[in-house]
Length: 355
Image (cartoon, rainbow, N blue to C red; front, side):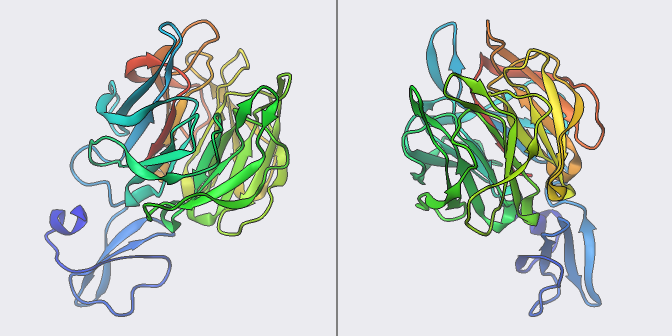
């Protein structure tokens, strides 16, 4: 890891929470996963050297935007873009997915740098190393040939979950599957079921605190839904009712500030571009946060977690696609502001980050 080089220290790197590594030597590095601080071992014990191991000189943590659909050309895309959260700017080319994909879902293991996404409308999954621009590589399979799923994870604890989806007219999916993000070849395993079969929903989590929330979506009709369900990510079981969104809608996207416990649901079929927030561990009602710069659905979104910035890229207004990226400060309810533009105008994409 770059942490060893950038701080002129040598030795092993440990990732664990709360208790310092027992069998460590001077020069070892400890990434304390419960509060995401980083420590180095000196002769007197562990000394904190940074708040977050991607806060080295340079671009910091990245968000990526994966796939999408150009409604003008009526074509799905294989584009991956990236941004550096710390700098307001246009997105940069990252690489390509191996197959065109849209209406897909993505998650990651956070600071351990691996993003995993499904190749919608197929069961294939691929992965990328987010800090290194590259094309997607084969990961495994998950969830059958469903599109319009949602995904989240428990971060550096390595479990990603994919839930919901849509196969054909009137065929909606309630199954949740899980993968082990740091194990290439980890195919989806049955986790449980959502409280309601639906597609086009959003998801978020409080990272290593292990609560994931699925919100909104649609059922046959379409009927737009306001239900939120929650799961304990490290314990396979059926989802349990959480509460309701302020506005029933589909095509929304979710993200969070990680361990700090605030979940965000943004955009969707609602015409106002509403952004809502929840306190994930309290299983409580949703609150008004603000609005996007442009109302739209099918947005790719991600955040740099405890650094409090979320970004929302692309989307479809109901008439045209957009290349807009906007951002919010997660712990400060307000309207979104302009961040920059994607490399290509598109909607129905997904996003994740290495934060």
